[in-house]
Image 1 (cartoon, one colour):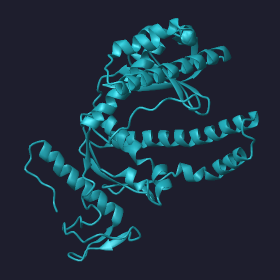
Image 2: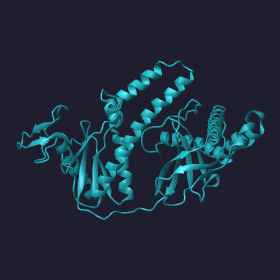
Image 3: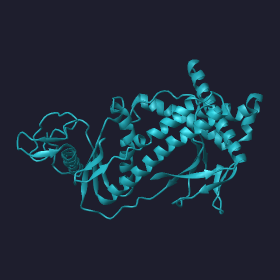
Image 4: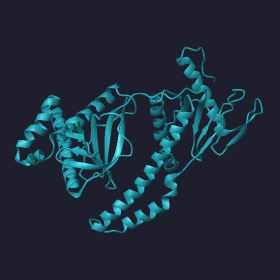
Length: 382
């Protein structure tokens, strides 16, 4: 399987200028590719991927309007053209149903005002030197903060500049699966807002609420930004401060999610979660809290780590009434308001904590589906 390993890089001022030029050239080639495809389609004609690359890269370098494209590495321009091709392919596959997930829209032009800029290079455009520096074609050797070693030789690298002005190198490497020792435990997870997660074994994970905790700092920084004159250097400096404050929140949330997901995957042979409609919940009055929780990122990490470490990961259908079923007798007691955190089953009289009962039901449903996938004659309860 392929994974991304991301590291912080520290280019010099001259290297930052070279990277900024590469970002701009890649953006222009990407936009030219989209425009050429759109014009060709409007004219009722067809154009191959090879012809697109020839016109927006090879031929464009020989024109006075695009002669400056020759000042950056050609691999950057070629990969930008390939990114435009892939964007169109993903759009067409989404329209035809070949691509799973939500429907994708038509590719959009990149803007020079985008706060996040990136370039992608294949093996002939970069090299990790013996002095532990990353060589990028026509940029030079970049200082890398190696937090861990690469498990294998990287097939490509993406140089990223985020909205706060930080630079990162994201390597794509091939890794072998590393199954963990088998365990007898398995859990179902009920995700929530007041408590981030309740496991079917009774353990509860408190919600860290990184955005809520940083709201005061963010409010002050954004209020200060609103009072700066547009176009001034002070406004540009304050914008970076705001971006760094938001980046700190996002980094803290991501680091916490990695630690929690690793702990759950390490301790359990099978993990089952509910397939929540996060996009729908993010359009309600709870939108800020839903985004702050980061459920989608957390479940993706669980799934990826389960695949890598030989664990079982399953999603229970979002319409499964996990909060309405009594985990003791299996009777569906009907919908309940969110404010009702403890309820008593009318059939058997058992008193349930809402989240723990839902986690137990999610485990039961996921375990039944797991047995069905393994050939067992087990079906979901009502």
